Length: 164
Image (tube, rainbow, N blue to C red; front, side, top):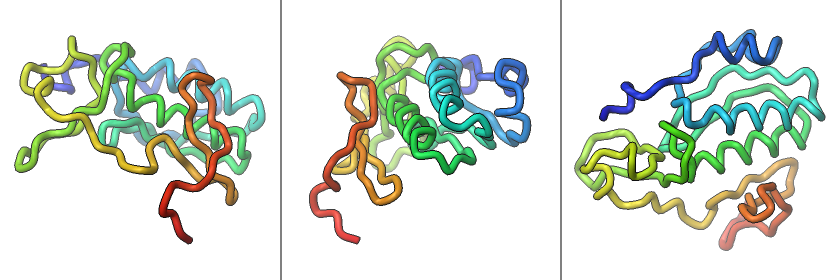
């Protein structure tokens, strides 16, 4: 089933559920399976930054991308956590999934899908090789890595081989 046939999150629903946060959003195009990630992000980010403003939500390279304004480190870490969790959350249903990338020479979107929502063809695709920076982000000079057991961003050393 093509990805555009899966239910999508509606901007109107986000605007009514989180007044002020999505009022200036220009673009929302992600599957309903990531709704809980977005809700967790907003609720976690609003605690330290009541002025949080989200401008765009989209899928890129099989994971969620959130464009928002916040100078608050805790809110930026909540954003990073949601984006990183999307790499193992099915965009169609929210179940456990993984990023599937098309084989070389194939022109298709990378998608994070569970086996149920991936087509037979997509189930044969290799998992995305995300490299040495998997689950990592830098914020105000400090590196953080997503720890799945703690469900949190934890301070970490820079990725191996990282140089400024």
